[in-house]
Length: 292
Image (cartoon, rainbow, N blue to C red; front, top):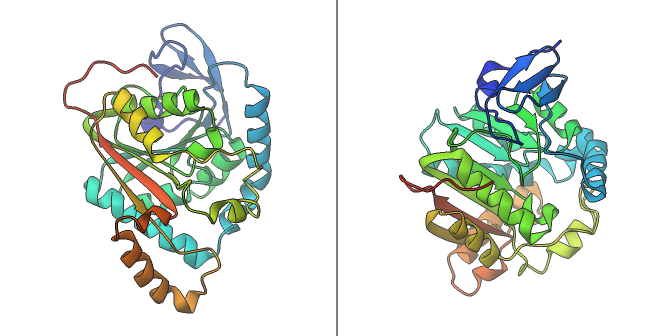
């Protein structure tokens, strides 16, 4: 038996009744409704019920690509976007805070945050992805679904989701995922959604070549993300469009690409063509309990 890390166990909650869970043999058990959830190779599997056909296809796809997922984009381009995201978190949260990465995949970003001094937690629907994250020590991870986050209320200082929403596709499930992120962040904490910008014309071409994209994705408009955070009770919502470095940018020319990117990001009307929408919101200091 591989035990669940106590720091992760303290964050978890039953996806059926939201009660605390405790470790029991090769499972975790809800102290409220008594439901038991399996633990596979140290990863708690907290699913709300039977996975729909679409969910199973997504899980199987990501389990298959997990060993090679980090190599889909050149290392220097991956590093560029990883560093931009780490810098954003640094601006929002002091080092040492608890960060949840929703849809963490292999935990590459969570691992970068861990190296920067944060306590990192991750959730994904693919056991293959989480096995990679756990094997590399990038984060403490649990298997779950965005629309039913398996974490207690207010357990994190910041929750972030990166390039995940366009895989969820369904507007209702996206709204429930973003609402759940607001729920699991403490009052005064921060939520961040960082996803593909539908107005960038290059995405359809790139996504055809990425192993994790099946063609069923839906690029989510900025206004939809803002509306979901607002509906969940988040405040001080602000957004930006960022990123312009393509995956084919040669490593020696990265300094030039970064200069062009920085210029475009700052020009209203032109920055609508940037690669990503970033929405940042604050969880109010006092709030009504959000539904997940």
